[in-house]
Each structure stands twice: as structure tokens, then as C-alpha cells.
Length: 287
Image 1 (cartoon, rainbow, N blue to C red):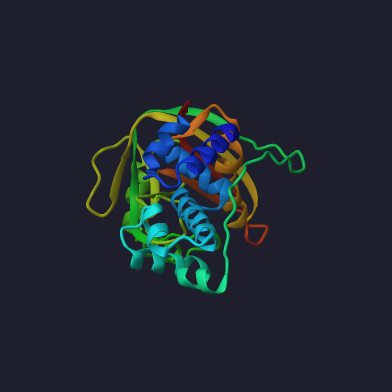
Image 2: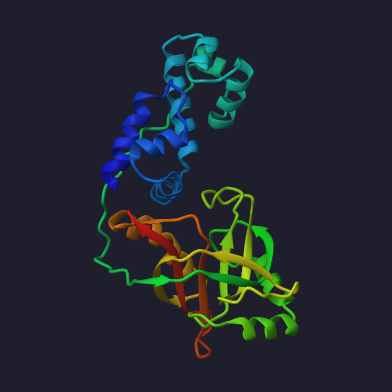
């Protein structure tokens, strides 16, 4: 996967003045759009669109330093107007394109290069399971996207579950894992930015279709699941595991993520404060 990523970086460099679409780039990489963008984000810390924008503006900065006119540079890198280019350039650099020409100020964003870094020889435990179609049933709401720390809105959602809802979920639950799970889906930024909202469901897995209007139901097709057990301080260990599934495991595996809700469950340790055993369940398919 690292080789493919570096080839894509070279492809982007060769087409910075063209109309680059995320779909075309993913097609060039030979992987699904969803999978490629997620891998790119977890390895680089940037969305693919942000990286392209930063590289275009960095090269535009160079052209301005070389004396090119603002109008020519704006249209060269795909902006429809000088005003639009100037706003984007100032937001990125903190100064106007005209300042580059008049004062020689400069901002740069170098081309990325992906390399393998070995850290301490740690292994990542996982298992693969096939699962028939099922439903998530539970209580859900839109909550803010949050990569780290305790999400207060999810805590409020958990506190809002009534005894009647708990009883129905318990009666419907008939599939492993026999735990209360947390599933997230329909993210505004497709899980690639810590912004916007997503739908979070707290519930159980069931093959039953009859569900009262007290609970929400989310169908999931039969698929393969990669499961990552983890144990340690909560929620940091769980969140770190979620990140590593994309930044470390997926690039070296024979699998790619499919567009279905991932989920997790957590069992708090009563003997240790803020310590838990968790599992992350990732929907995948063979490449």
C-alpha cells in the first residue's frame, strides 16, 4: 500500500494544474475511494482534498515569487476567480497573494513521502470472522465527531436509555458479541475530519426484524469482520486501537474496509479506575 500511496503522490504532483477529483485519484490507486481516503488520512493526518489544496497553494506561492501575475496563477491552479483564490490563499498562508509579489513573503507545503517506520516490534492482535446479515437495534442520535477523549453527547445518549428500551434490547439480542455495542455511521465528513456530526447508536445485534418504535434499527448485510481486542486505560486505548487498524493493520493486510458501520464494545474493569477491555469490529473484504 505504501508503494501505491507514493505513486499517487507523484500522480498528484504531475496534475496539480489539472482538475483532480478524489474518484479519479482512487481509481488510479486501484482501491476503493472510501478505503483510499481513509488510509491516506490515518497515515498523513490530512484529508486527500486538503493535501491537494495545500500543494496547489504552495506551488502557487512559488509562481508568485517568480513574478507571475495573480490572475494567471489563480486560473492556472483551477480557481474560478481572483477573489476566490485570494481568500483561499490568505486563509492558508495568512497573507494575500499580492504580498508575495510586493514583499517577497512565502509559505510552503512540501510534497509528502510515505515510508515504513518500525516502532518497538509491537504486534497487533486480531481475528477474522464471517457474520450473516443482522440488525443493530438500539437508541441513536446525531453527535459531534470527536477523535479523542470522552464524547459528552454519547454519554448523554447512554444516560437517556430507559428501562423499557433496555428490556427490549435484551429480549432481541441473539448474536455475538452478546454485549451492548457502540456503532457510528453517516458521518458528515465521512470519518475523515474531526468536524461535523455522525449518528451514534448504542444497542445490540439481532437477527429479529420486528422492533418497536422505542428503538432504532440499522440493517447490516452479511460480511467479513476484522476484530481487534484491546485492554488498557479507557477511552485512550480503544481510540488508539481504532486509529492503528487504519494506519498500521490495513496497509499491510489483504483486506480493505467496506462502507458499513464499524462498532465496538467495552467492559470496564471494576478493580481498576478508567481501565477496560474492548473490541473493535471492522467490516472488511479481501482486496
